[in-house]
Amino acid sequence: MAEQNETPVSKKRTDPTSQLARGELVHADVKPLDLSGIPTVIVGIVAWAVAFVVVLIFRDDLKKDGREWWLWVTVAGFGLGWIGLAYCRRRWAAIQAGHRPETGD
Image (cartoon, rainbow, N blue to C red; front, side, top):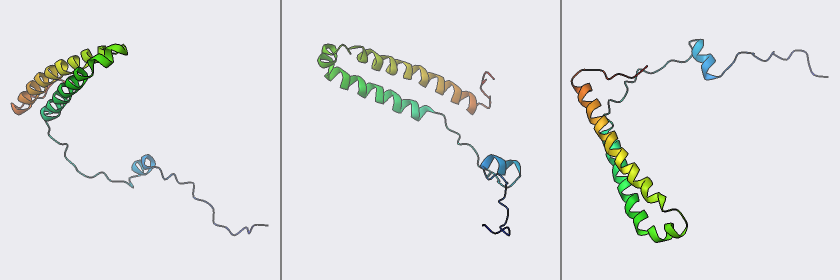
């Protein structure tokens, strides 16, 4: 038979949410990165352009397999990237001018 002198198991929850609620976890004061997003969008545009060239090289194989639409996906990605670049530039200009862009919330 097990000894009755065993210490009782703690019922205290140890998940991070509970620890945060009890004040046991402290968040570091880290400022968010102030990024314009422009370099990321430019990388995306370049990636879609490279994908277009690769798909163009294999266009005959894709046409044979019924996947020629992949070519138009790369064109759409490239075009939407330019729209995204215009949006990011306008947003960054507004931030630099001291205006907070509307978030829609």
